[in-house]
Amino acid sequence: MSLGEMAGALSRLAGAPAPVYMPFPKDASRIDIGSFVADSTRIRRELMWLPKTSFEDGAARTLDFFREHLENYLDPANPYPQCHFKQAQRA
Image 1 (cartoon, rainbow, N blue to C red):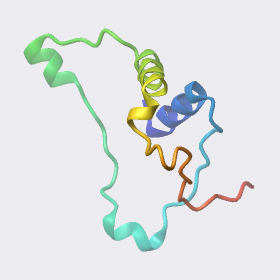
Image 2 (image 1 turned 180 degrees about the horizontal axis):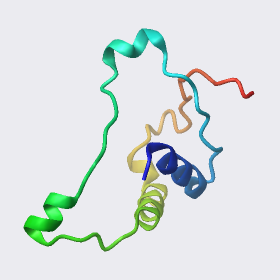
Image 3 (image 1 turned 180 degrees about the vertical axis):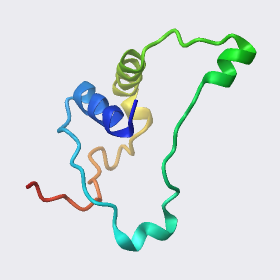
Image 4 (image 1 turned 30 degrees about the vertical axis):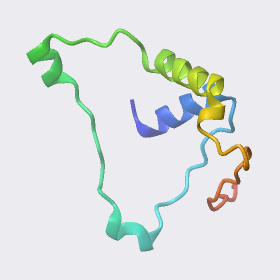
């Protein structure tokens, strides 16, 4: 599953707007770690481990948990913090 597919699934499950794709900022290229790929082949081979929960089901359950316990993760004095990111312009 690509990062874009994960972002799309999480947005859909959260009822949030679809991800907006933007070019990677040139001034941030010095911190770019490149592509990342997770592979569960070794843990499957050595420990006979197999996932029991799909990504979408696990993500939905995680979102439900945080919605249920949100008061434990937000500052009561500032329950609606502002998101500080540059808003992408839609083409």
